[in-house]
Image 1 (cartoon, one colour):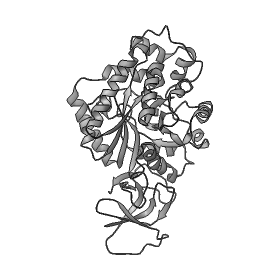
Image 2: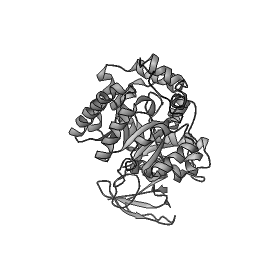
Image 3: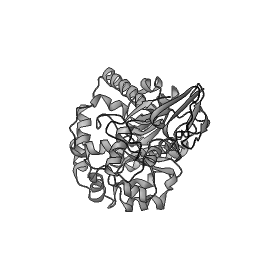
Length: 397
């Protein structure tokens, strides 16, 4: 047994213990939680740390296989420009992709991440995930805006998922985004998700250009699809609605759905979601440092909060971020939305992500019987319970 304490324990449930004690088995399972009411006494075998303790982090959105693109793409070029850069810089050097993915996985673990919702378009990171200390749920993306490509794209994704599951890894097939999936492909993925009761993740409202494509059949993403993917869009009919409104019918109401980025999500979008599906089955992933890197904008987190939606934290990839660090994401949110409490941020970084990925039976909260991992954050402002510029995370369990 290990007995661990710190100035504060943020359990991820909303409960905060001052100088509480966590007793863990040798396997890292929480055996007991003691609320000392802040009156901690010296005792044999107790490890006391200066800082705050949280459960292990859940990174709800990442692209491990893009780790080799770190530092190669300019910042603040907008989503269409970023998509074009990804298209040009993707490499056939498989050893390079795997090496950088392995290094990124190690950094994620060192930064206190215990589980990741990872997006994949190939099998190159399967071996990394198989040998990782982190638990991954892989979202195998199907892409194809042309209706003629729907069956091929669906089959390719299905084959990748079968390969992933054959080695015991968790995953599901998922659309990339409204602007990269035809209605025919969406329909196939929706039917599969209903059949398998699987989790879906979709890039959503990352750029105003997505809405322009669907409302008017124009804009930079429209041009990107023609110029860089050489698609014939003469038959494409704009819906007159936002991108999310245009495809929400293909997100099954009974399935977990993770909507990623949400920079341009409006009240109208949120009302549409509420009218069609349960917010309890919907999670909104924010990746603030990636959003600033690509679009130089952040989601309206106050709007999301006011609508009482479930918010999770992601890092996106090293193609659009300098670090894969949940603490860095929380620091950015805190600096732009100072009214948010640290306890709330911890819930977004732990419990909500675990529930979204259906792993809350063991992850996300410090509760008896769970094995969530234990993180220590040092360099905190312990008086106001806020992150400082020098705050760092250390994985204790």
